[in-house]
Image (cartoon, rainbow, N blue to C red; front, side, top):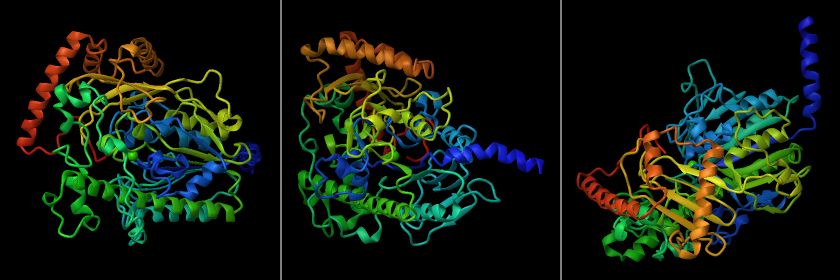
Length: 560
Ligand code: CA
């Protein structure tokens, strides 16, 4: 009896409070670039509309300047869960993990009186044990007939449920709908992380979308074809452009090691002519075939997500919970969809660095807002905890932007630059390591060109883009005399931002030596970078000759 009284005394106020707080449904897709959501406009909006996602924007807020701090799966997920940058949470690369006891967002939501659940793609290795409920894909998981890991009698990873014949996007939605119906504690609001695997490559759409966009010529980005000689730097082009084939995987056959032209004909033969042999077609025709296969498979996966988000919204509406649920839609990062003849993410270029961010909660967030405040993925946790009236531990580096969403006004002391650091180097998709900042008007990228141990060097280079005059980042202004003062100011801002976020060079001292060596980028540095370019080219040609198609230069790679 005493025990019961105690329980009532503790829980009654929480329940009373909980009634005023929203449920929180955090939907995160994988690699769903903002420019593949029609609410963001762009070249794909007319041919591949996403009406259910657009509804979140029209009935809530659409944020245009939300950025990941490291455009790769596990690291970005770790930022969202911990509210920390990767040099603090330790998830530098794809080996990144967040062990039980450190899954901050789940822990604090529970402490705030929320029932917590994690459903779908997790990709942080360890058991999501800090959630009340989980049903997660092992690693990347399968697109078709997926299995999921659940809590059970056996050790983590061994208790599974299987969805024979189902597409993973449908299965994840089914699991969530069942949990909402049967798994809920009626006395608590819920915090649900609902993470789609789609549209991560290699793409497999549900069979019902096989004819979607079949007869459509997908609009192309201009930069797929024309590489402005002012785009990029010594880091991405090499001396006299000698590294253009070896930096960044390509759509066509620019990169001899990895391209979609190499990969996709065997994976998606239906997207290519019968008995397809690239030798029978021109370079331009081959690139166009690979591009269309890529975009169609990607957009069919996106269509599956949009339809399933429609199912979620309808179910919440039927249950009378739509308007007391804060709904966020985002992705772990963006994706290059052929811009600059690049595929995949990892880059700090706009299409990869930007995350979509749509949020709907009619009681507090006015409808139809478009907001351009600079937000980073480390800010998500603090914001959701703010809505939940939970505590934000001192370990969290991100800040809440709840007041922005409610008022449309940027907080007076809000950051003016997003920090970025891609810690991996020339792995999988041949992207050199880089660090930089993005303001509302400019982007400064520094490719220091080495792995975490300071090795496998590629030439260092700096890039500056004016995002107002040149939103597609085609003209590197770093060496433009008219930008000299701007460069000095932004470099200073980058150095200050590194200090603000705690990326002080102590994590990988050998790497930091290289970062410092080429920071000034004086004539001696440039001469040295040209030597590095030649040396790297020789090394890469040797690797190709030796048949090493999958050159790994970082420690601890486990899938993508
Ligand atoms: Ca991803």
